[in-house]
Length: 115
Image 1 (cartoon, rainbow, N blue to C red):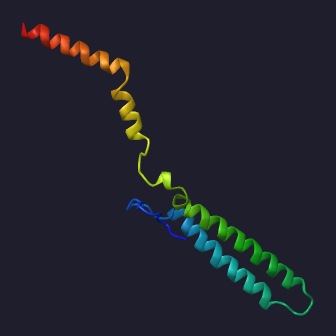
Image 2 (image 1 turned 90 degrees about the vertical axis):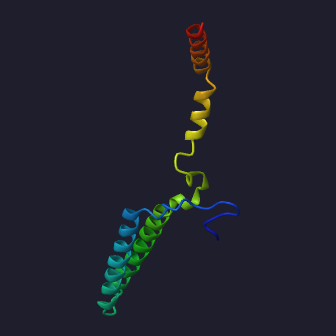
Image 3 (image 1 turned 60 degrees about the horizontal axis):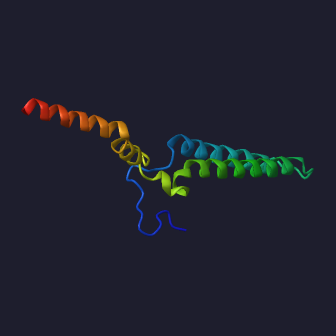
């Protein structure tokens, strides 16, 4: 799977969300240590093994969720351009009837001042 589809290049400032990335790393490290702690305390009764398995599943789910949220921009190519809608709004403003009327009035005013 490629981050950049054919013909499109991500904006150079695009990078994973730093807060989500840090949280992802912290959750993964602390969850892994907690899981290993539970498995190392196993004495044959199975209670610590269950806690370790549940801890591992929760850690993996949280890590996956944070990883997806940190890289969410890469999944939606329409978000790659900064202010992607700005050009459409600017174009709409230029072609708006009021703007045309302002330009016409300014042109009339300039003609009157020449005479």
